[in-house]
Length: 286
Image 1: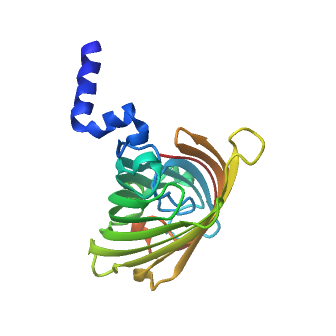
Image 2: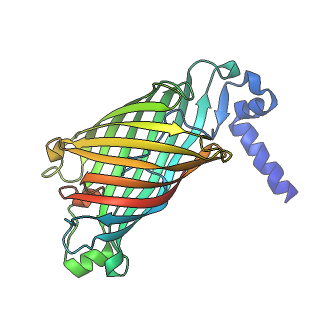
């Protein structure tokens, strides 16, 4: 075991020499390997975001054919920093490179938890900013959507090959310590189905975060809204909102909350259907 650990640390030291120096002289560090925080936060209310959690959905008027109102949503993934450059003393602007990867799927409770459909997501992102302050991001994001096997077998539904590869540009602006505004624009440079899909997408939202505000240690609360619009849906605005409790954990956070969504089904294979639903879920922001 000792030799394996020594070899492991030797590889880290050779591949990330600046990270080794950071451990020795944190005040003089310029490079940080695998940072445990983000320069550009994930949108809490975005129903297509990559995070880790499970949610109970109740659709008020199901639009997906032969799908019940009671559903279970599972997300497995997150956003991971690979390397960060920052000025000495953690002051000034930093630049961070990272990637995101995830699985977002819906399961039909009324049909023995058959998988209705799921999106596979991965992307690369470069963010620039100051932690907790104004930040920008530039990235490439791939979304590949699929029809669930059980749902396809039961209904005969075939995949329309909904795949989207887009360039993304975003800005995050903490107006106050509690209020954050963000906006994002994207242009797809490749679509899997050019007959149905269009390149443009726009997104904006607001978050109100109050950590350690309930008198119970680090427990706090949050409220968030998100608006998303796709060119392929004639720029119809999809609205989402979230309200709940949050608890920090090692640079990340647990969230337990209620949600509301009205608009596009957040699975690409069913993008032309509009549904309204309420939700209750637990999530961990990786």
